[in-house]
Amino acid sequence: MAAIGSAVGLGNVWRFPYVCYKNGGGAFLIPYLIALFTAGIPLMILEFSLGHWSRSPPPLAFKKVNKKLEWVGWLSSLTPFVVASYYVVVMAWCFAYMVYSVNLLWEPDAENFFFNFLGKTSGISEIGGISIPVLLGLIAVWLSIFIILYKGVDRIGKVVAITVPLPTILLIILTIRGLTLPGAIEGVSYYLTPDFSKLLNVNVWLSAYAQVFFSLSLAQGILITYASYLRRDSDISNNAFITSLADAGTSFLAGFTVFSVVGYLAYVKNVDINHLGIAGPHLTFITYPTAISLLPFASAIFGMIFYIALLTFGIDSAFSMIEPMASSLNRKWRISKFKATAIICLVGFIASLFFTTGSGIYWLDIVDHFIANFGLVAVGLLECITLGYLYKVSLFREHANKTSDIRIGRWWDLLIRYVVPSILVMLLILSIVENLKKPYMGFPVYALIIAGVLPIVFIVIASFVLQRVKR
Ligand code: PFF
Image 1: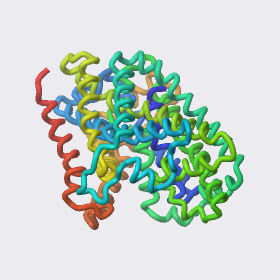
Image 2: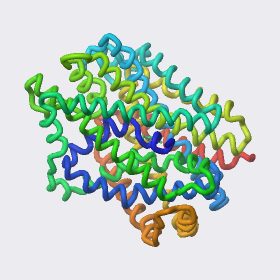
Image 3: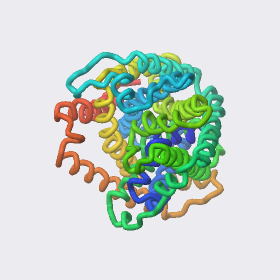
Image 4: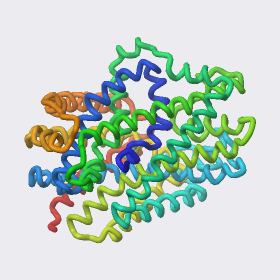
C-alpha cells in the first residue's frame, strides 16, 4: 500500500494526461504499456528483491552486494531528497488552493496564479519576496511529513490505509462529475483519439519510458527501503505487478477526470481545446480551477475535493522521498528515527524555501528538468549495471521466486542486463544532446549550472563521503 502511495502522486494527475495526449493520445498507451512491462515492472521486481533480500536501506543493501558499492545506495537515497525539496512546494500550492476553495477565493487565471499568488518576478535573476501563503503551506506539508515518519514504519502503514483509498475515491467522484458535463465527450476524445503515426517517433517511446520511471518512483531507493520492511514470506512479484498496475490505472483514470473538465471549459468558453494550454502548473492551478469555478452548482465543494485529492495523493509520495535517507542514517550510525527525520525535514525545509520566492518557479522548473531527465535515469542505469553485472542478477530472481506466486523466467535477467540499460543509455544521450544544443527553456547558463548541474554533482560527492564516514 505504501509503495502504491509513493508511486501514485502528482505525476499521475497532471503529468500523465498531458504527456499522453501530446504523444499520440490513445496510441500512446501502446508504448506506455510496453515500457511498463519491459522496464517498469522488471526494475520494480529487482528493487523489491534487493530490499527484501538484504532487509536494509539502500546503502547497506548495496554494501551487502559489494563492499565498494555503498555509495550507489547513498546516491539513490539522496536523489529523491532533492526531488522532495520542490515536490513539497507544489504540494504547498495545493494546500493554499485547498484553503482558498472554501469560498472560491482563488481567481483562476494565469495572471493571478503567477503574479498575485506566487509573486513571480520578471526573470530568474530577480529573486523577489517569499510568498506567504506558499510558506504557510510549506510549513504544513513538512510538519505532516515529520509527524508521519518519525515514529517509524507502523505509522506509515496507518497513514497510507487512508491516504491511498481516499483520493482514489475522490478522483472517481470528480470523474463522474466531469463526464456528466456538456463537452466532456469532446474532451475525452481529444485525450484518447489515437494518432498511430506518432509511434514512429523515437521521442514518443522515450517519453513513455521516462513517464513510467518517474511515476513508479523507480531508482529512488524508495522501493528498496519499503521492501526491506516486508515480512519474510511476502510475495515480491505480485506486489510489483499490483503496485505498477494500480499506478498505471490511476494515471489512465486521471486522464478522464482532467480532460472531461477541459472539454467542458472549451464548451463554455466556446474555444478550441488546443488553446487552453494544459501542461504543467497551468493544468492544476489555472485550467482546472477555471473550469471548476464555472460549474453550475457546488463549485466550492468540487474545488476542495480536487485539492484534497491532490494533497492526499502527493503526501505519500512526499514522505516516501524522505524515508530512504531517514532509514539509512538510522541504520548506519544508529541515529534515532526521531532525530534523523527531524534533521532531514529541517534541511529539506530550508532547501525548499528557495522555491517560495518570486523566482522560485523558474528554479523549480530547472531542478525538476535535470533531476528527472538525468538524475533518475542515471541512478536507474547504475542499478542495472551494478546489480546486473557485478553480481549474479539471477540470484535476485531466485530470491523473488522463492516467495512469489508468479514465477519469473530467465527473460527477466536479459531485460535487466540488456534491454533496460540500453533504453536508459539512449534516454541519457538524447537528453544530453538536447541540453547541449540549446539551453533548457532559454534560461541563462549560470542558472542551469546552479540549479541543474550543481545539485547532481553535490549528491554524487556526498554519496562517496557518506560511504567513507565510518560507522
Ligand atoms: N511517483 C511520484 C508521482 O508520480 O507523483 C513522484 C515521485 C515519487 C518521484 C517519489 C520520485 C520519487 F522519488
